[in-house]
Image 1: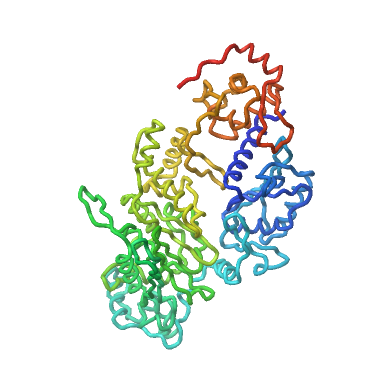
Image 2: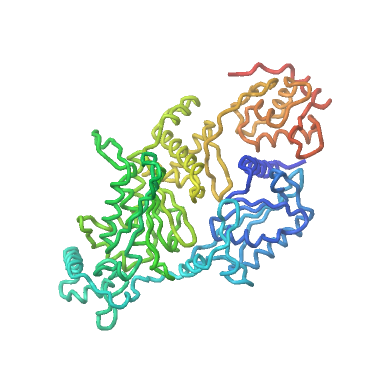
Length: 612
């Protein structure tokens, strides 16, 4: 008989397997392998892929494909565990997965949690083959080998070098007017440079370098140069809009190139988006104002970040920032991936610990665009301000997709439809608070976007961090409290396929099948109260052939497979019920009372009437 701790572990495994069965495949955070006798040949690919992404869970002894994630067990758990540990040692850097053996009734399952490695140690790869031949990342439900360019980008990001101080291409010069405006802005903001020449000031800000203070830097060319687009593709932004529903049949992509210094790019992108996005009216201070269907404040922060925080290392300076507009979203893609000092999970929650392009950012803080706007206005707080703007405008918060050679920020378009959330709250008898309404509306929009989008939008998960950003300003503690309250009400369902809990919309309650009624104590479905007697009485009221596992779950009013598993196996271990077949994967299997179970129900008396 399983101990209570073992039952809980088995229940958690079964709940996870139910999620995999529902989707029909592995996913970004979980990989199941049959592996009855031997370690799978591609296990190091999966180890490295999880380590290079967000971490993940490997299940050995769980059948794949048509077997629908049923437990088959490993023959020798100790040997399999040792082999997995040895495989992890072959990686560079060596991995230390947390390995457990789950004593499932259908066989032992080896469960390994692979943590992500620090960004400045990626890519994790097989030591014997080197990074270019054996580096993988997790994409969807499979391991994808990194391209040479992606590996080079990861290796370049290991060392935080300020590439903006590199020399500009030969022949590049400064724009006299731009320099004059910059110098004036610096001198106006501080009196520290009152006794130095303009050339010395430009040197101290990294616009110029060299012993004679005359060599133009890459950062200087991008921000104050004379037609920098003639020397660098980084001085261009590509913007394209997919044909919309209102465009005439056969319409092609609307694609333009915006060129110039950083300030000119900033103005150009925001101006182009202003003519390509829809408009909505939002309430501000008691009056209606015209706004884009993506908040302007969010757009300006995301575009600014892309221009000044992108990578210029390892040839990335020959790549342009890309802005894509679809009916669903505006996506801004920066070359080179995210800076190693930044954690994509904490963006918008914590101030940035460091910046990649210190020189470029320092110059940009004093830049004015041709329209008079600031390029960098809220250094280290930009994403938080963007989140607040999205909250105020009733749009979803920005979504981040961290990839080996690029970093994408997705801003979903259009205001959220809050009516479905209102109906769900009303049906559940839950008070309609602004926080609950927004959580459900954002989550529904995110799940809808994932289902309809073929890009990397499947990566973001709705955890307490994303919830806090959706409710900005909000603490993680308050966000988690709101999520747990909606979970207790049966509106949200918790999942643990990632390193931390995440939440999804709970499915609508199913009506009990014929012959099965709701049990008396459905209100305690999430507690540790003994439900074995309720299970026995449900079988008494059920059809002569017994009830299937799902019918029992519904009859007891349980919302989780783990809880169903716990009470079924307690009744089985006690000899109170018996299955109709010993075949472990038979989906027609039912359970009926044994003589011992009937004797116990006779002592309990007649079943109580169901409560409403």
